[in-house]
Length: 189
Image 1 (cartoon, one colour):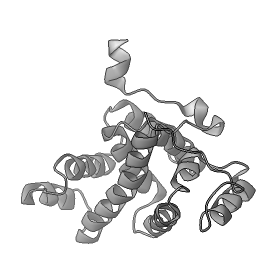
Image 2 (cartoon, one colour; image 1 turned 180 degrees about the vertical axis):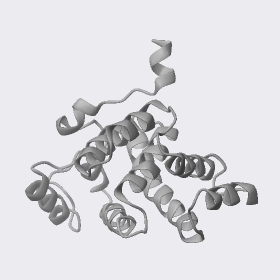
Image 3 (spheres, helix red, strand yellow; image 1 turned 120 degrees about the vertical axis):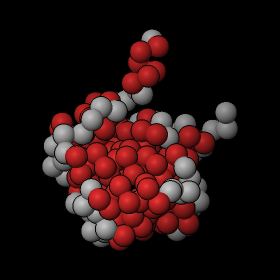
Image 4 (cartoon, one colour; image 1 turned 90 degrees about the horizontal axis):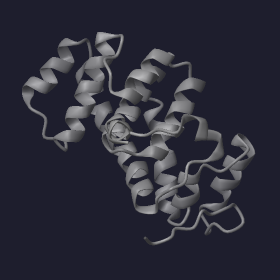
């Protein structure tokens, strides 16, 4: 496997070092994902910018995390599953929602379950959803705007999940307590 550098503010290329320094100052550490993405400053900027934009959607924090954790689960991204578990907890997402997303069990809220199902359909069909998929999502109480916002969330997670797959990004110590193994993989152990 090709080794990717976990950049620090001191080793990152121009255009990324300031972003890592800001993370270090605000979080007390540099998330490994960003440390890897710093190798391509445009990717780091794009990911952080798109994440800030996704935070402005009509979705609540619980709904945004539902979209992101669903994509992380389906893409089997261990780094993002751990990181987004911690983020979801810090945003007040109910533990029963987080655990259902991590374990692929039914969500306690039918509307959230519809969001997970539609997100999973978008990922699984690579965007080629059928009218019935959209109609079911709309019938659950979402609108056309949210159909498109799911696509935004999926795009955001593709940037991080694929980076982590290529770089085999290590999970930061801050997220270790939320380490994740896909439930089907647990059963095989």
